[in-house]
Image (cartoon, rainbow, N blue to C red):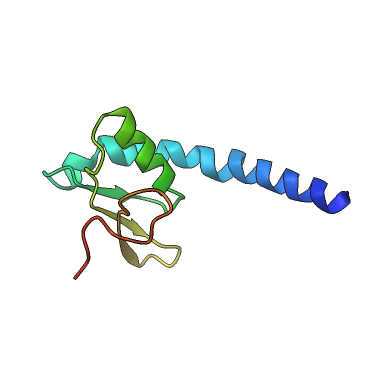
Amino acid sequence: MKVAEEELLWQIKSIAKVFMPARTTVEEAWKEREAFHSSGEYLYFKTPCPWKEHVFELEADTNSQGLIKFVFYADDRGMFRVQAMPPRNGSFDCRVPLS
């Protein structure tokens, strides 16, 4: 029972301290996407965060499914990363391949 309690508390803490604050980061990048690139198809995050689910929700909320093609962010070492947006949540495919 102790293990289950610890796991539940860890999950709640992760949602409260990582996942939910990431929504604000994703919303800021969403609002600034056209300043980053005029097409509005790319997002740039100033800090890494769990972003995929939030992007899918924002696309659905704004009736712009499939808009975002790539996401750019700096990792913990200051190196820039690019990730292609998957066509749907949980997919390993890419809307647009990097090659």
